[in-house]
Amino acid sequence: MILIYTPVVKPRIRYIFKHFFGSRMGEELSFTSDLSVFIAHSGAKMSYGNAPLGNEFFIAAHGLLTEQGINALELEIFDWDGLPAFFAANENSALPFDFFAAAFFLMSRYEEYQPFVADELGRFSSSQSVASKHNFLHVPLIDLWFERFLSTWHAFFETKPPESESSQLSLIVEVPELFAYKHKSIFRSCTEGIQDFFSFRFVSIFDRVMVLLGAREDPLANLHDWIELMQQQSSGVRFFVLYAALGIHDRSLSMFNTAHQQGVKSISDYAPTAPMASFESSHNAHALRSNIEHFTDLIHRPVTSIRQHKLVLRFPQSYRLFASLGIKNDYSMQYVDAAGFRASTAFPFRFYDLGDEQQTPLTIHPICLSETHIRNQRFSRKMRQLFLSFQEQLATIHAPFIVALTNESFNSRSKNESFLITLKKMLAHE
Image (cartoon, rainbow, N blue to C red):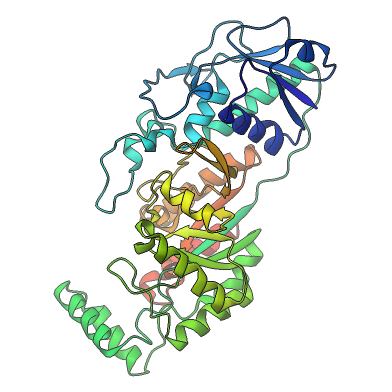
C-alpha cells in the first residue's frame, strides 16, 4: 500500500491521486495528515505539501488541489525536457512542477468553467483552450507526464514498472439518421428536396427520387455490411443512435416509425448500442430522461453509455445530468473543430464535478479523432498520416485509441468510394 501525507486531505487530492495510483498503477492508496503515522509506515510513501518532511518522495503542491470553487489562474508554461508544463515547483520536488495539480486542471476541464466565447451551438472551441494556445492539443500530455513520473517513482524506490497492456483501437459510430431518404413522410421528403434545390444539390434530388421510386437502395442502408469488418479490425465497436423527437438539430426519423425501431433493434443485436443525447436534451433534463427511457424500452437493455449529439457539452451541467440518470460511461470528450485530446489524456477517467467538489460515478472515455477530422485532410495520403500519427503515439504509451465515425462513413454512393477505401486500409493497418 502507498501512503500519501498531506497537511489537509481534500476531495480534489483524493480524486487525482486515486486516478494515478489506483486506476493507472493499480496500487492500494491511503492518505494521512498524521506525521507519526507517515513516519511509521514501512512501505512506499510520498508527501505532498510545501516542503519535504525528510528524504521521502516529495512533490511540491501548487495549491489548486486545496482550493474550492473556480478562480482565475494565469498559467506560466515552461519547457520540461521537450514537454510543456505549468505550476512550477521548487528544487526539492521530485518533479519540477506539480504534476497532480496540472493534471487535475486539464482533466476537470477547469478552463471550461471560466467565461468563454461560445460558437453558434454554445460550444467551447478548441482554439480557446490552453492546449491549442500552447501547441499540445495533438498529444496526450498528461499521459506523457505520467510516463516520466513513473520512471522517477520507480527509480526512487528501486522497483520495476509492471507490464502495460498493448494499445487497442476502438470505434464508435454515430447514427444521427438511419436512412438518408427512405421511410420519411411526404412532407419531410418534399421539404428536404426543396432545401436541396435551393442549395443546388441536384444530384441529391435525383438520388432521393430514385430511392423513393425503389430504383436504388438508400445510401445509408449498408451499415450492417460493415459491422463484421469493424469488429474484426478493432477491439470493440459501439453504436450511438439518435432516437428522439425531431428538431432543428435532431433530424432522426420519428420514434414511432416502425422501420426506425426495427433498425435500432437490429443494430443492438450485433453490437453494443446506446442513445445519442439529442441537442434538445442538452438544455432540457426532461427530454434527456425521456430519450433514455424510450431507448431502454426499445432495446430491452439498460442504458449505461451515452454520447452527446453535436458534442454540446456544458460544464458541469451535462455530465452532472448524465450521472444523475444512471449513465456510467460518456463518449463525448472531444472537440468538433480539431483532432486531439480535449482533456489532454487518452485514458478513461472519472468526471470530477467542480460545482459540487466531488467525484461522480461517470467515466469519461476521451476521443481524439473523428470522421470529420479525417475527411478534412481531403487526400487519402494525408488521411492515413493523421490516423497513423495518433495510432503510433498512443501505441508508444499503451493508451486506448478511440475513433468516432458516423454511418455516413459507409455511404454506398460513388462519391464516398475513395473515403471507404482509405478507411478500410486504415482499419486493416495497411
